[in-house]
Amino acid sequence: MRPPIEFLLPPELGIELLYSFVIVICSLMIYRATREMYELSSYKGIQYFRRAFLFFAIAYFFRYSIKYLIFFFNLQEIIELNPHAIGNLSLFIFLYSSFMAMFYLLYSVMWKKWSHTPIKVLLINSAALLLAFLGVISHSQEMSIFLNAALLVAISFVFSKAYHESHNKEKGKGLYFIYFLLVLFWILNIIDILLPRFLHIYQIGIYLVSTFLFMAILYKVLKRSGN
Amino acid sequence: MAKRGKLEIMRDILTMVQSNRNYMRPTPLLRKSKMTTARFKEYYSELTLRGLLKEVTDEHQDRFLMVTDKGFRFLERYRTIVDFIDEFEL
Image 1 (cartoon, each protein chain N blue to C red):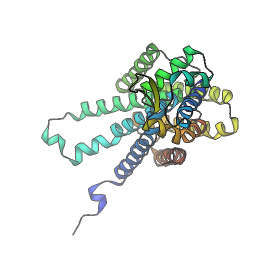
Image 2 (image 1 turned 180 degrees about the horizontal axis):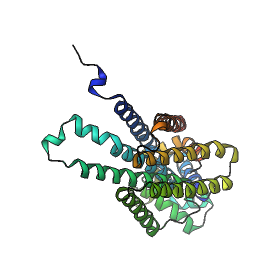
Image 3 (image 1 turned 30 degrees about the vertical axis):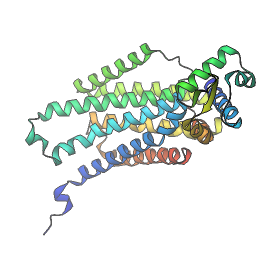
């Protein structure tokens, strides 16, 4: 008799795996669907938009999928892996990619106003690396909440500025609202991974809303890119 | 807005060459584009660099411009690209 699926995979892990799989697939589909448009136009806004979703895919791959890959393919038996080091490394990549994804999402709507200099990109990369490093080494609840709240305030400010300067207010309204929700739920995701017990009760809700937001953006992208 | 103008200009240049049986000398193209020489050169090198436009030389060593397959694809997809940029405020 075949074992029930719960025996193979505990339900909460199954939900996490499904959730991460949907986010990774949606992000990669967005990246793929916009490839031709970018190759033909070399338009910077499209390039930053694509990068944002590539970083989202990397972040989610390292958040969940990697541990299942190690588990399913029995990699820990083939090569000697230190679970603590792997955990910290995947957390570091997840945090770094998350911050970079948020930065590129912001940059895709603000690049015309912000002058592009390699030093700025280097500074943003350094800031993302520093935040990721702080996230890994700091186990303080206050510190994590403070950092993410500061990030949310900064991003909300930029989005509200972008919305006010938008040339098409009616269209922009819905778009910035989706972006704002995406960032909000992304930050809740970061808090959830740094402080697993803090938002445990709302976890499924966060997963569902994040998935819905990604699917809404994917739908818009596929519709508009003619795919 | 400036960048949008750039895509439009690129489309206009490609359309001019395409509507001239896809074979046009640079000088009449410059005249038709109503741009300064410096600006035209900028677009010209960008279009050729990106492979949307190519330069060919005939047996008399005269230079002509032709829209490439990628250039035709750009013209086909132009409206979609612009709508996408508009939709996501990029």
